[in-house]
Length: 375
Ligand SMILES: *Cc1c(COP(=O)(O)O)cnc(C)c1O
Image (tube, rainbow, N blue to C red; front, top):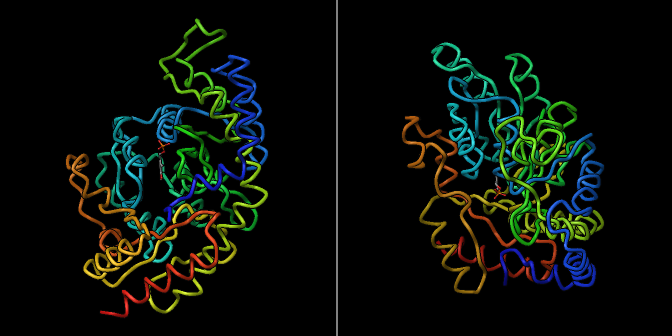
């Protein structure tokens, strides 16, 4: 069994994907081919924002957004303590100071109460100026934007929505990647919408920022390719990856998003009451980048993981360390946030993809519950 079955997906979409790759090779437009523009138009349309600017990966997407807002030394950027490294790495890379915020135990997303506490603390200390909240749509579920936006407004902060895992989710129909002042996603193969290598995209309704981002991703270009008006990056999405993403986006819209929600529904039905299951807020839809459960403690997690491995069922621990526990952030001297710390010891992600069938899910749950009950 695969943790995320990319082979089955390829088998389903093979004709269209192969044709797309063939077309790019025959056109020789490997960089900035028309598939890139076509993909950007479709992504912007799907998400419901004015501009989509693709780039080389989800980490660059975040960096480009921070560059656009001129975030750097002296600025404080609020980031959940429980996320993938990139969300905070880009903040430190920009020269700004990341403030790690605790999360909710059942949704895994940033705690609005702790966020406000940390903003107040930062203001009181006066060393750094609060500028941005990086809201991560962790494991596929949008963060609590209605309340986050109120906080952002109250303190005059920008929202950078890190939706690397959230593409496809929504709140009452309004899609992920449309909540932040700027939003970003990743097309790393294992993400809800993945390509066959690295890729990323940035979304915004702001015309000025979109122009700036389009310049930054190609060496800060001005009127032409060899007219450079600012320091930028080399961060484009390959034409080949765009050609691969076009049929994948179609399949994502037509069936995959629905299919992962069915998988999650069955998992929750079978596991509810026995282990901690992910909570989806009222009116929210997740794109299920991960299906992540919570076990009583680290010892039980190890036992369950070993028992499943013995049966050929792969599981993963997202994440083993909080941001505050990462050696790379030692210099920021921050304490572990209690809920984030607890989650790192107790979470376990189960196989999750649109091509999991009912029998497989039932088998996984049966073996998992056997291991839990045998304690
Ligand atoms: C994957 C991921 C990223 C980075 O995306 P890459 O394309 O791998 O650079 C950023 N943030 C989160 C939350 C992620 O899961």
